[in-house]
Image (cartoon, rainbow, N blue to C red; front, side, top):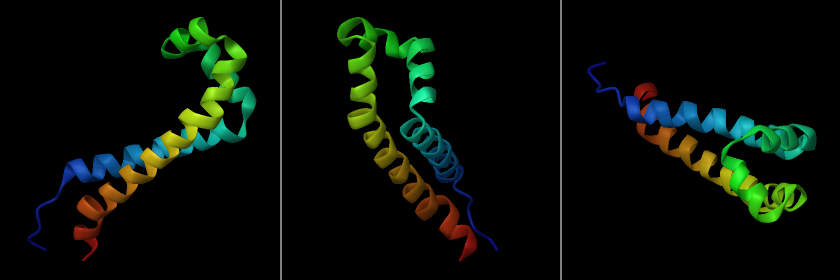
Length: 88
């Protein structure tokens, strides 16, 4: 067991799991997504530009699926570079 631990990979894995859980919750619970958009400073720009309903639609059909794909990428990268070498 003289292996170098890749903390970056482990951090990517944990972040990917957390982001994936958050994105799935927002995707399947419209009220949670609406609450987030109402309170988020990041979403303020989109609300000002497109309005509340259009921002919710864009989030549901563009941003959340992209976030889910990126989260899965983080999980795969973290697993392959940080977790898999530890269990081999």
